[in-house]
Structure formats: structure tokens, C-alpha cells
Length: 455
Image 1 (cartoon, rainbow, N blue to C red):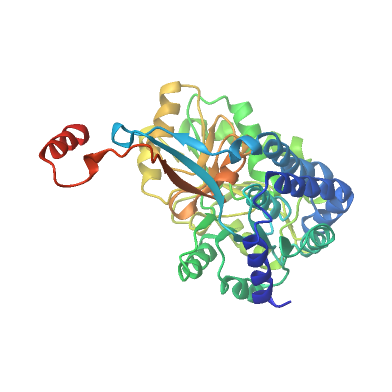
Image 2 (cartoon, rainbow, N blue to C red):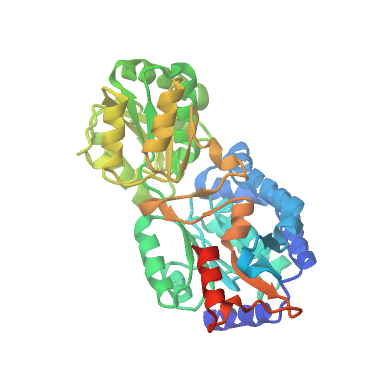
């Protein structure tokens, strides 16, 4: 495939204004939904092959989100596309000012392997709704899903409007050498820096959905049984291979033993006593990541789990105790089913410590006292998060999802996806029935009036 020609074809398609019409955009979103429905069984099979995902997990974390996102856009798109009138000051009497939501043009979506369907299509939904053309580059580490995605899109859409380009690192590099009007990348922070550097050559705007070490703070007054259940669910979903998964627990020292005891119970409830034999327990994506994660098992002491299966590339849900900030497991995002625990003595100490670290993509606080909830939410910077829950903020289409600092740039989901892929074009419409002379030089009265109005 000639990538340069593909980009040029999409540019011509866009410049011919095919995508500007509301009806066109809605039709494309409905085609996409229909294709997802038609291939639902195949999607379950592909994700089983790539990551050993169960039907339940695939629907709740991948397909269900996409269906809901399309439904939300169908319901609201016409309203979002309307020009947005804005007020004008006294100096602009006789004018009308408004903001028009204009598509950028040809967009590139580079998606990761951990949610290979969701994170490829969700940004594309926003790009389509905003009136752009889209090239999707899925991950080569989830080949079954990437191949199925390419087949579905090829069957349904004109490649000059929406297409999937499969390939490895060299393909991504070839795409990034082209001139796009917008780039949306989900992946690691180091690769995000490369994407941003390449985008800067053409001053191309970017959204970078990255990651980082997302903490869970468990305070002294937390409801331990529900806290443990929600942490275990959020951490070990997809075997911890989730960008907003709890990366580590920062728990009040008086509550650590109770929390560990309760988390052990919850792990057994969700994954059975031996998760490695659970047919629905997700595997690690490849040998490289399996060995990287296995090396962390020697850090601290294993409070629960620690067993691995080299053939299946599975690591059971594992809790690490007696961890320090200097341990290797605390230096980078874990992105796997290993959960280190550190302790603090006072909430102020914990906040002061976390302030000095990189801003994470997510933060979760468990505690009942509202003043402490407010203190954590105000004092610490992070992409998004929850009080007394994990991950659940992602499921609300009215909340933007995105990072801050090293955890990302920009946001999406729901209207925020439409806004991300739309340029906010400011327009002023001036009357010709009169012409206020104040703006023109030469009159003392005009100058004094202007000073009075603007000052």
C-alpha cells in the first residue's frame, strides 16, 4: 500500500466536502455500529485469541463502550454541530459573533494492543462525528483483532474516508512522516514523545493518551470490604493491562493488614483460588512483557499470588508487600497483574509525597470524610479519577478522559471527542447598515469614549 497516496486520496475526499454534511456523518456512524453488530461473534473470538478475553470482559470493556458512544453521538450530534452564538461587547454593536465547529481534515489514529478494538474505534468515532477522514493504525501485538478490524472497515467504507493500515513499527514511522491535520495516539509516554516530535514538523495538533503510575490512596476511614473489591476489580481487569488501572496502593499503615486480608478474599471470589487455571483470566500480551513483569516478583515480599505460567503467558493476581519507592517495580508503569503496597502515616504526608511525583493518568481515593476527599482532589493533579471507586469514571460519556503532564495531552469521550477533532472557528458578521466611527483615528471625542468603554 502506498501510504503517501492513501493520505492524498483522503485529503482529496475531504477537500471535496463529502464529510461536512450531518446526514453523511450519521450514516457512517450507523454503518460502523451495524458492522460491529454483524461481527460481534468474530470480535469475541479475535480478542480471545489475542488476550484470552472472556465474552463478558470483551463486551463490557470494548464493544459495550463503543455501542454506547455511537448511541450518545447519534442523539446529540445535530445539536453539537450547530453554530454557537456568543455575546458581543458594546464596541461591537451591530455585529453577530459565533463559533463554527470545523473538521480538521485528514486524521491519524494510532491505537495500542491492550484494548485493541475499543481504543482503535473510540477515537475514530469522534473523528467521524466531527467530519474528518480517518486512517487507523492498530497494534501489531494484537494481530487477530487488527486483522478483523481491517476486514470490517474495508468491507464497509471507502478507503478515501476511513481505512485501517496494518503493520509494525516501520508502518507507524511511514505514517508519521506524512502530513496529517490531526494525530490521536494512545500508548506509552516514550512513544508519545516520538509522535509529538514528528507531529511538530508540520505543527500538527495531537492528542496523546499515555499512562503513568496511577495511585490508590486508602485512608484510615475507608470501607475496607468495598474498597478491596473495587481495587481488585479495577487492577486485575484485563490482567492489569489497562492505562488507568491502579498501579500501586498507598494505604494508611493502620489499615494495611486488613486491606491485604480483604483483597485476598476478593481475588479468590473473582478469579478462583487458582487464577492460572481460570479459562477466562486474561494473559500477558507477549513474552517480552511477560518476562518484564516476572522480574518484578522478586521485589519486596509476595503477600498473595506470584505464580506464573510461561506457556500460557499468565501471571496470577499478585500483591507485593514491604515495597519501597526505590524498588524497580516503582520506577515505571507496571501494566500487569502485580500490585505493590506502600504505607503512609498521615494523609498530608501522602499528598506531599505524591505531589513530587509525575502526574498520573488516574488517581483513586478511598475514604469517607468529605474534607479529606476534597483535599485530595484539590491538592493533587491527575488526568481523572474516582472517590471510593476505580475505573468507573471512564464509563460516563459526559466526563472528559485524558491525561495531564507526562500522562497525556487532550481528552475525549462523548462531546469531548467531537470537540477534540473539531477546530473552533471564530466568526464575526458585521452590518453594513451603519458604521460606528469610534474605531477610526482622528477625533478627540472618539478617543475619550474608547478609553471609557475599554478601561
